[in-house]
Length: 152
Image 1 (spheres, rainbow, N blue to C red):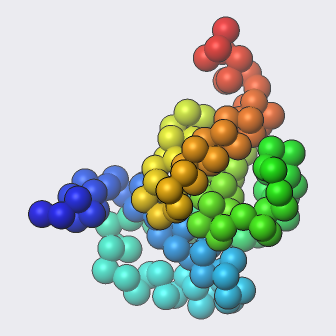
Image 2 (image 1 turned 180 degrees about the vertical axis):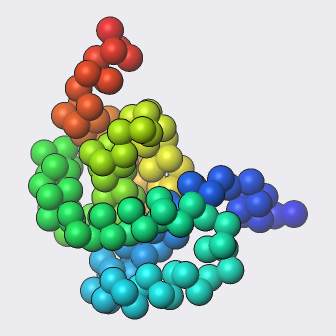
């Protein structure tokens, strides 16, 4: 069994939801496709049945609908315009920032770690390090009490 197959076989439904949402965000960022068309395409994939569809819906639609707000939050922590980021890193950062802002039931470290794993799997060689640094800073803005409690 290859490493990719092992990872897919052991991915949790929520991680699969993040992976599929990232694929949809990538399609949206690169081609500007209609959200409904992207969603329909993603839902046709075999692995969709094994994902947390509610989380997928929240991520895909939430990230696209709030992209300008999420980019504004990210702008304080990135070293270039978000439009200049690779589409994979940009999508991962949108997901991580969305989860930090909207998914309070997910501990901030989990949101960051999941984004780092997405970047490792789909992004460039050191993209995960960049994602980690940006989201660590964003977490201090978005979840100051939780971050302070961990470091306090």
